[in-house]
Amino acid sequence: MRLAPLLAVAAGSAIGGAARYAVAIALASRSTTFPAGTLTVNVAGAFVLGLVVRSLAEPGAAGGATTMTWLFLTVGVCGGFTTYSAFALDTVRMLQGAQAPRAALYMALSVGLTVLAVYAGLMAGFMALRLAGRAS
Image 1 (cartoon, rainbow, N blue to C red):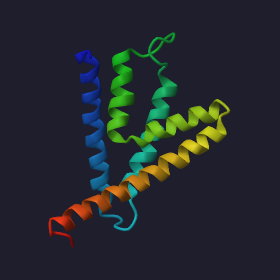
Image 2 (cartoon, rainbow, N blue to C red):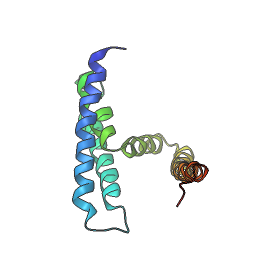
Image 3 (cartoon, rainbow, N blue to C red):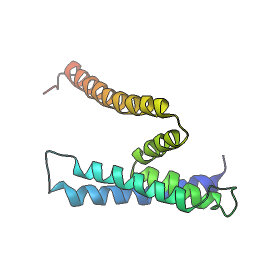
């Protein structure tokens, strides 16, 4: 693995992660019952990724972005800000490719499985604490 692409992704991820934290802090006091910060970064991240993908041709295409710029912005900044943006882009590309059934399955699996995974993780953590005698 080359170091330069890894550093481009790492730098972008640091910026994206810091921006996500800033949004979460800014919106945290406005609502305690709705994850406005998460929704905001997911929607904004999807928008930014779409904007970048549409505005900058992929590396190797005529007039395309450099590989480092592409990695920095898409994988780094957008990925650090939210992984939801990649999910949204994948879905839109399937829909644009006339693959609506595949896109629907992908959306259902992505949402359903991640929700189940979070629940499973919460339950596993609870069980571990219970076994250690510290469950609440």
